[in-house]
Length: 231
Image 1 (cartoon, rainbow, N blue to C red):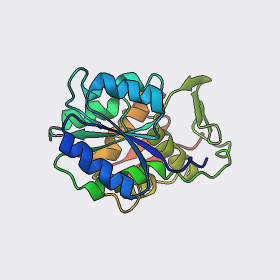
Image 2: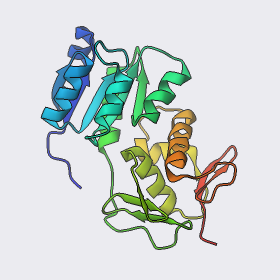
Image 3: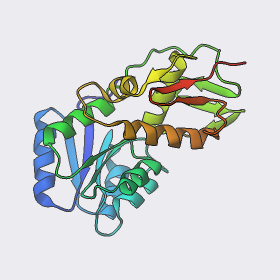
C-alpha cells in the first residue's frame, strides 16, 4: 500500500533544540513534520494529524512517552520510534512491549534517526497471501495484514507483523537474526540482535506461543528463528 507523499512525522520532545534539529533533518528529506513538547499534546497531535511515524521521547512532562505509546496504540497504527536518554535495557524493553517499533538512545545521529524513519516507512508488500501451509492454528492474511490464532484475531504492531510474514515466507527454514534486521529495518540501519529478540518475545506472547515448547516460532540458538511447518 503506497503512503501519501510526503509522509507525515510527529516529533515529540520537551527539548526545543532537539525538536528543531530533528524537524530540520526530516524536512530536508521531504517529510511533513509536526511537533509536540509534552505527553497530552502528543496524543492530541496524533488524533488531529494521523501521522505515519511518531518519534517519541520517553521522558516527557504531563504523560511520559511509555504511557503515550500505550494510549496511542488504542487508536493509531502509526509507527513509533522511541528516544531515550537511558541506556538500561528495561527502558528499551518497556517501550517495545507497549507497542513501539524501534528505539534510539540519546545522544543520537540525526542521520541515523532519518534512516530509521525511512526504514519504518519502507514496507515492501507481496500483495498475495502467505501459502496455506502454516503452523497449526495460525492464519496469516498478508493483504489484510490480519492474524488469527485458533480463529481468534491477534493485534500485532507493524514490525511484529513484518517479522511473522518474513518467517512465513521461509516456512520451515531458519532465518538469521541479521537477515531479519536487514529485511525489516533495512541494511543501512545499525541495530543489534537484542532488538529482534525483544520483538520476537512480544510476538510469541501475543500468539500465545510458549518458547519452552513452541508450536509456532522456534529459536535456533546462536542463529535465528524459524516458523514450524504443520505436522
